[in-house]
Length: 292
Image (cartoon, rainbow, N blue to C red; front, side, top):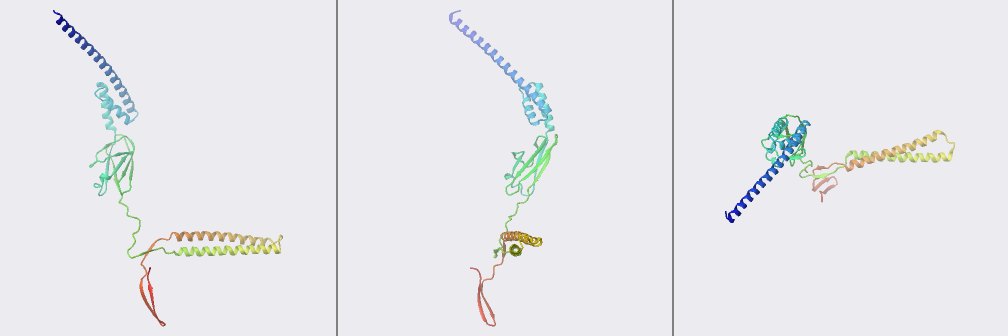
C-alpha cells in the first residue's frame, strides 16, 4: 500500500468515528428531551385529574388538551382523551335566539357580550359551549334600549335557549308645535289663589304683631310689673298667632312662586289681526288688532 492510499484510508476511518460520535450524542439528547416531555405529560395528567375532581372546568380542559397530545405516552393520552369526552358531555351549551321584526337587517350593528366578552352570533344560531354556573348576556343595538339577560346553566344541560326581543324605538317626547299657533305660558289659577292666601296670611301676621306690641306697651304703662295673668296670656297669644300667620304666608308665597315658574307651555290660536270696525250709539270706531 502506497502512502496516498494509507492517507485516504485514515481519512475514511476518522469520518466514520466522527459519525458514530455524533449519532451517540444525538441519541442521548433525544432521550433527554423525551424524558422531559414524559415528565411534563405526567404533571399535566395529574393537574387535569385534580382540576376535574374540583370541577374547575376551564383549567381542567386546558390541561386535558395538553396531555392528550401525541408527544405524551399512549396511556396518559388515552386517559386525557377519555376525560375530554366526558367533559364534552358535561359541558352545557347555549343557543341565543333573536326575535322581532327587521333584526335581520340590523344584525351587523348588533353588539353582544357574554360575561363581558364580545361574541358573534350566527344565523341560524349554533350552540355555544359554556361552563356550568351563572352567566350574563348584554345586547346593544343603535336606537334601541340595551337588553341584559342573566341565567344559570347546569352540568350536562344542552341547547339552553335564551330569547331576546328589543323594544320598539321610543318616539320623541318633545311635543311638536302645532301649525299656526303661538306658544304662551298663562298663569294658572292656583298661582293667584296661593298668592292671595300669602298676602292675607302676611297681613294677618302684621296685624297680630302690631296688636300684640301695642297691648304690651299699654300693659307696661298701666300695670307693669303687676299685670294680670290674662293680659300676659293675651299678649303671648297674639305674638304666637303673628308667627304662625307669617310662616303660613311664607309657605303660600313659595308655592305661588313655584307654580308660576313651573307653568306649562300652551299653544293657542293667535289673536285676530287686522282692522276692526265697531259702532255704537255715539258713532263708529276703528281698531287695529294684531302683533308687531
